[in-house]
Picture 1 (cartoon, rainbow, N blue to C red):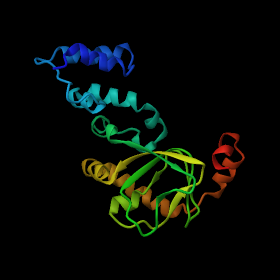
Picture 2 (picture 1 turned 90 degrees about the vertical axis):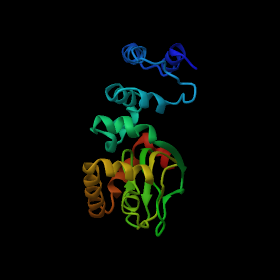
Picture 3 (picture 1 turned 45 degrees about the vertical axis):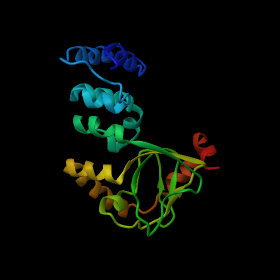
Length: 209
């Protein structure tokens, strides 16, 4: 059995800062049984054993960049962070690679972290913080469009379809927000002005060359 000392060493590797570390250690030390982390040393284990308040803070600390850049992850209930942040995975696409294709089912909802994608049917451009594949995943329908990487590369986080459906089942307010987003996407067909501004921005010139 890996004892408390080993557990504390694992937490310190996360570099959470002394205050949050000490709260986590205090909670674990006060448990009536020893904490066995031998079988699972991943971040998910920490979220599972900690109370909601600490789990939320730990999740938000480790995913602070994602939360600041992705509106979908902002202002959620505390249990959302402890239940689902660790379910996010990452993927990198390269120029002209498809995030979705017309008449095919999507199995991931993507959140763009860096880079640009383009909708080949509406000519809409997708930038940091925007979501791709909402309608196809939410309604289990084939995609109505093809969206490919416009920049040299595009970095995404994503929830799988299974996880995303768990989220909307637990949080009806998120389901309502997604329905409104789909309606808005239908209204905002293109944003060429945005990409023209990007082309004049030195920060992005190399990305879309």
